[in-house]
Image 1 (cartoon, rainbow, N blue to C red):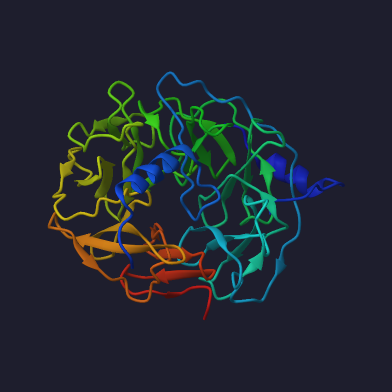
Image 2: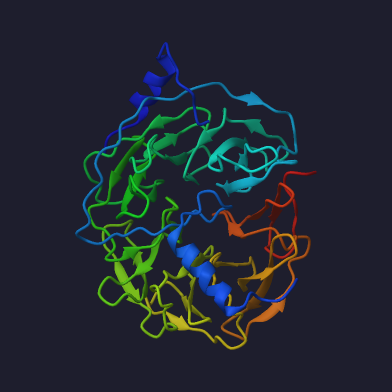
Length: 415
């Protein structure tokens, strides 16, 4: 794998430094189908945390060409402001753990927004008590946090249809450099992570291993035999297992591939009994991992939502009851609380914005409507960090909310 250390050293020593990255009723069936088509056809780089687009990967997928670019560097300036998002829309939020938090904020001020992908990055190393600016605004199509100080970003090309550039930061977004994909990796190294990357949205993406020791990024030799449905860069990992959602290229049915050996080999489960797919195509299942090997997968089709669960040891997936489940597409997935309760999202048409309702079940029981105390219905989706902290952005009022158990919430950016 090719290291990135030289790039950062060159960037730091370069005499010229370019600009740097720094509750109403459910929608009717027609609108649901319309939203599914939109969700399946567009990347969510400009929406909060969705970051989902259509991509494809299989065992014969070509390895993307190396990506070269100019090193980017710059200073960071502390804001001293415990409420950096006040009055500004949160375009994206992510956390490495309960202390290392990141937000990208909209740069639009009043009137129609012409540059929706242009964002300003801010970060916190103390759980949101204080924040610092991480640079002047830049246009990005995807951002992902891979560790407390490790971030990657996909930057669109200057011209329409041009290849994107993959940037990496090893210091919390303070300095950036273009990543170079060279050679191959047998597995994700200890302490490393995996990303799914393609130079162009909507084209086959390939799983890459990110090595924190060498600062290298390289494609895995063995790729999961799936048509991928993600452009989120980050890949789910829990209890030593990598999980990738997609569809089976032979049947088109929803499927999940799992690796218990850091990407050296993959086992794949096809959800043959999943609800009938929409007329356009099957959608990939949406995964919710826990602090253990237990994982949930939600699928939607024909206005029916089905939930599956695996304990992670047998390799078998159990279909849970789908009685009384809301039929709104699970475009935001789900999450699992600290006590092991599985919680599904339901989007409903609010007066000013989409609102969320929540349905929860434990141990395969029936799903019942629940309330998340202190979390506005406009906040979401809910995500969980590897150390068990929950967070959800509310772009309606520019606030990031946090929780230690998934049930009781409080603002993380307003104290």
